[in-house]
Length: 307
Image (cartoon, rainbow, N blue to C red; front, top):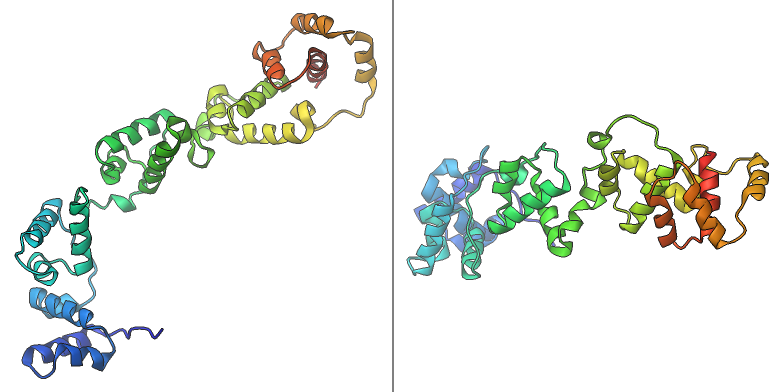
C-alpha cells in the first residue's frame, strides 16, 4: 500500500490558500498531492482556527480540560454542528478524537482532563499493602490512574498493571514477583547468615504460597534473590541444597554416624525429632505437609544440623 506523502507546512499553507481563494476544490487539491479529502478538510479547519502557524509543527501540545471536552460533546449531541464544526469551534484537531469523546459519554464513561500523568514515572517505594490501598482508591475514583499516580508518586504504567492484577486475582495478586518490591535491597533487614534449617523453612513456606518470593522475603527479612536461589536449589538438590556447598558432602562419616543413631520406626523418629535442639518450630510441620515421614524428617534434620 503506497504511503501518504509528507508535505511541509509551507506546502500545506499554499494548498489551503488555493482552496480558500477558489483556485481549486478540496477534492482536486487532495488528489494533486496524494492525500485524502479528510486530511485536506482538517488542514482547512486548522488554518481557519489558528492561521498559517497552526499548520507548522508544534513543540508543545494543547490539551483540553475536562470541562472543555464535556462542552464539545454536549454541543455535538445537541445538534449544534457536525464533527468538523464542533472541532473548529473548540480547537479540537481531529474529528476522530471528538468521536471517541462522544462514544465515551454515550457509553456512560467520564471525560477527564489531561494532567500529564500517563508519562509519570514515580519513585515511591511501595509494599503490597500500599499497592492495595492505592488500587482500591483508584477504583473508587473511576480508575483515574493519573490522579492516583501523581498523588502517591508511583509509576503510571505500574498502577495500570496493579489494577488489572487486582481485578483478576484480588489483593494476593499484588504480591506477584513481576512487580513486587518486597525482598529487594530495601527488605534485606539485618545482615546475617541464615542457617540451613531456617532456609528450608523459608523454602517450604514459599512453595506452599505458590512461590511468592516477594512476600517471603518481607516475612523473613531476607533478600528476594536469596529466597529465589534457595527455592531453585531445593527443587534441584532437595534439602541438601540448603548447604552453601550446594550438595552432599563427600565425607562418608556422617552416614556412618546416622546409621548408629537412626530411629527404628515412625514413633521413635517422631520422638527423636521432638528432642532435637535448634530446630525451628515450624519446620517439622512444614515437612509433614510436604509429605515426609517422621523417619525422613529425622534424617533431614540430622543432615541440616551438620551443614
